[in-house]
Length: 582
Image (cartoon, rainbow, N blue to C red; front, side, top):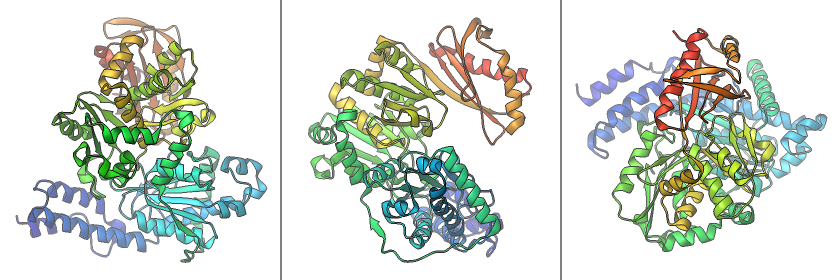
C-alpha cells in the first residue's frame, strides 16, 4: 500500500470530516508519528507523513477555536493545576471560562481575609496593578490558548507580563522578580502529547493551596454548567513582553548568599573548562529555547559549540513519539552522546516539556532525584558550608534523612506534591521529590530543572569529579540506598479503594513480616500519604492509592540492591491478602 492510500485508510479509521466531537485526532497523530519515524528524517516519505500530521493538527486548531461544548471531563484543579485533552477539554472557550473564574475569585478578596492571605494580595485593584505572568510550553495550541487568557485578563484591566513559550520555574521566578500577583502557565508538565494544562500560582510563586484550587474548580464548573457569558477584550495596551530567562538569571544572582550558587562564576568557569562537556535532551520542550543562554550567560561564542550538546532541540508537539519525561529510556540518547566524548568530566540531563523536572547522568550512571536531591544537600551543606534542614516528600529516598542525621540537621517530610513544602520555604536548604523535581533556599517555591542543572554543573567543575564518583564517595561515608517504584491496577477505586487499603492498618509497628527468605520487623509507620512501612534493616516500602483511578503505586527502598524485588513482592502480597489483587 502506497503512502496516499495508507494515510487515507488510517484517517478514515479515526475521523469523520466536519465532526470534531467524535474524532480522536491524537490517536491518529500517534499512528502517523509511528509511521513517520520508520523513515530517515528529512527524506521525502518522512516529510510526506509529517505533512499529514500537520493536516490533522490543522483540524485540532479548528476544534480549539470552534468548540462550544463543555469539556468532556469536568474541570478539576489538583496539585499541578488542570489537565485535559487538547480540543476536547482545553479549548479557547473553556480556557476563557476558567480564567474568568480566577478573575472572579480576586473580586472576592475584599470579603475574605483568608482568601487575601492565601493569594498574597489585599484587593482586586492590587491584583490589577501587580499583574499576571503568562506563559505556555511547547504543546500544540499553546499560543492560541494564551491569547484566550489575554482576552479575559485584558477585559479585567489586569497587567500582563507575557513570557511566551517558557518553563514553569522561569515563570515562577518572573512572578517573584516582578512582584506580580499571580501567574498562569499553560502546561500539563510531562503528560503525553494529547494533553494540555493550566497551572495557577499565587503571589508566593508556588503551587496554589487547596483552598484556592477548590475555589477555582467550583467557580469554573458553575460558569461552564450555566454557560455564563465571558466578557473579553482584544486590547493589549496592558501587555508587557518579558524576557523570562533573564529575569530567572537575575533572581539566581540576587540570592547567591542564600543558596551559594554564583551564576556568573559557574558559566565563566564552564566557558574556560575544556575538560567538561554538557549534553541536554530537551525532548522538544520549552527548555530548548533557553539551554544555550542558560549555560553561557548569553555569550554562546564563549563556549565552543561542541561542548554543549542539545538533543531533541527542535519544535515538535508530538515529542518525536516518545513519552516526554525524564526517564531511563529518554536518558539513553544522552548517555550515547556522552560516551562518544573524550572529555574526562561529563554531565548529561533530560528535562521535561515545561522544565520543572530533571534527571541527570555522567554518561555511565543514571542519577534520578532520589539520589541527586541528597547529593545537592550534601554539596551545599558540606562543600559550600551552608547550614540548614532538608525537605523531601515521603515517597522519596531516605538517603537525605541519613545525611541530615549525620549533619545534626532536621528533616521535613511531606505528602507527595511540591506545594506541601510551603511550611519550609525559606528554611530548607534543599527541597525535592522523587519524581525529579528540586529547588533550593532563596530560589522559587516551584520545582525547577534549571536550578538542578546549575547545581550539577557546579558540582562537577568544583569537585573535579563526575556525578557517579561523587555519589559513591557520599555513599561510602553515609550508606547505600536503592530506591525504586512500580504500580499495579487493582479491583477498586475511589472511596472503596481507600476503605480496602485501611485493612493494612493491622501491619502496625512491631509486626513481623516475611521479606523474601527473611523475617523483618516493622519499626515505624508513616501514614501522611498512603502507608509507608519502615523495616528494621533500614529498608521500607510504601503503598499509595491513586486518587482517581483503580491503581496503587509502590515506592520501595532497600539497603541491598538485590532486595528491591522482595519489597515489591511483599507489597503486592499485602494487596492480595486484602482482596485488591487476584
